[in-house]
Image: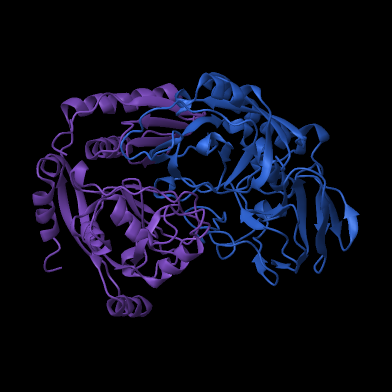
Length: 328
Length: 301
């Protein structure tokens, strides 16, 4: 079976849990920006966490199914419509062949996900179905969806067995707030900031600018200061420059000391800007939900705290699947 | 290079959140630093620790991604520190690699057209070309001398990344002969695919079209990233370059460039390449003499 794409929306791509193991040659991990929301969509339609979904950015697509199927829309709050009639989000929806799925205006956050029973069945590239647009690999022909695309959908898993619950309980849905606290582990090149620069980073408020996409999010705020020094050979002339190095996913760089950039799932794998810390793995989905204008505070935590938060998130995920009676 | 100490002080270890270990071998770029990075990366890879996700050697540092659920951070740090310590007494002196000839059309019309669109506010000398500027800041006579210096000595692929398959290149010459050119004042939003660029002391080849801040000198004639894996050189993997590769640029004319395009279209293009053993001590002692030896491997290929 397949989905026929009418209006493709702003930037609709096929994504899954991502593609690791090739960062050493500059191929980023890609994958759903908000992994938590994407996988609960999969849970609702009887998939495992591994199946590919459609990631919709602000403006969603118009999708017509050519067969009877089961879908769920999770992620950022948005009006979901089937043949023009409102349907609930975070809930399983049964579609008949010829039914049309469409969306109203996004009410917060940045991205929502269409999960379908059997998953989006594009070929795997380097072990993943995720789209890496810049490199033109993965997903549907290596690019975002266009009008007229016919996107293949896989056969139902486990004989089409669906979990007992049809809806993700409220308590397991993320909050899409206009303020965020993002936990970071300081390190990498934070020692190159002045005390005042570090204080600005941690004590002041930063706002997500419109320059935010799958590669990274840029924040505006008071700026930071770098220690003056004689630059090492090969590092470039600005004190925010280093000899080009690998970039941790989630790391924060501050080119010229002005606007911090958090690198996200499609980020460049390396470059010549000093990083001052890294968003903890448990808060990467949170950052992915941040719309332009989101007021953000960066909170420094220890590596041990980061690991604890990672375990807590895994526990929450586990409980959410259990609440649906689904197997991850 | 002979003035540089081949022995480096201990690396700096720091965390990139809960999934990345960053090992800074040196703040400054040098051949010994890069060689040490590659040695650590190779040994860590050979150790096959469960929980290691990506090992990314860079110019003078190493980034390791790991799954902390399988490999506790401290255990990984201990393993890498042991490898680093062991290198002191068992330093790897040779690297099994290959030398590759990369045809380049210098002063081509594609990069010239893009450069035209990014002058005022982007470039240090908006009235001239990137290559004229590069010649000037390196105190060379003219563009021709710069091009000569660019291709007559080979380069080491010191890192692959930024975007898929993009090689960073470090020329195998003494530090006082290294070409150094500042990046654009502000990055361009466009760079032609296969642009041969330069920023700081690093050369590069842009694998895909897109943003970039390096000065532009020409275009490489053949692909270096081929997701469709149509050419024979990409049969095993869509990315051509690996860290440790040695690159010899070869200037080509428009006619030769077009002939290569025809070979690519016919699916018959192959890079000229030969296996070599790269020895750090020889490269440090007499770079140009050793480069001649390395380049001989391409004779008759």
